[in-house]
Image (tube, rainbow, N blue to C red; front, side, top):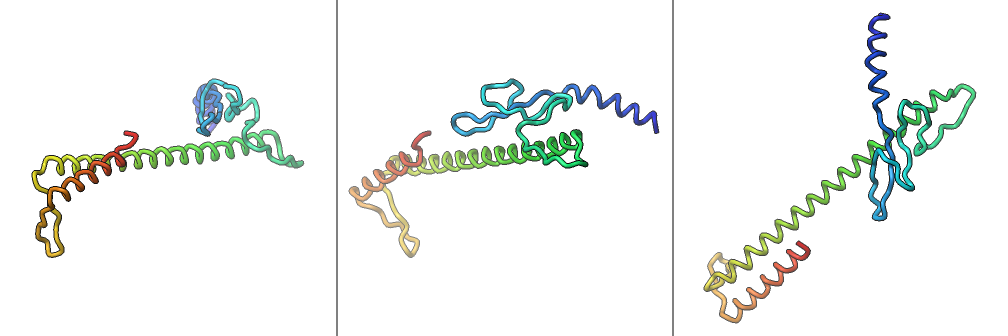
Length: 159
């Protein structure tokens, strides 16, 4: 048993010393950034070797039975949960942004295909109530092409 404990300690010591300091900062746009280098206004969220208490986590109330080691462990656990939740929220926000961008790109592509099809077609038709083709007059076809052009410009705006 002592041998297993000694081996575990020998393995754990180099790993705990390798943990870098982590600093959390918020930029002007409100984006949270984590870095290993301190910047003005950054909060320390993890200390090497646990020598100092984490500053970004609220301090635990002191009680006669509460030791500083227990406070540090509780602060570390609470801070780890907060960081994990923050990272999950940021990942979800990036996924939503990617989905929105993909949807807009798909809408733009469909609008471009509709416009190009209406320009290349000699005659434009719409499907009637009974499923038959109703060909548009030249004026109506020009209006349909214009509408497709405006729809394409709206869908592709900013791309």
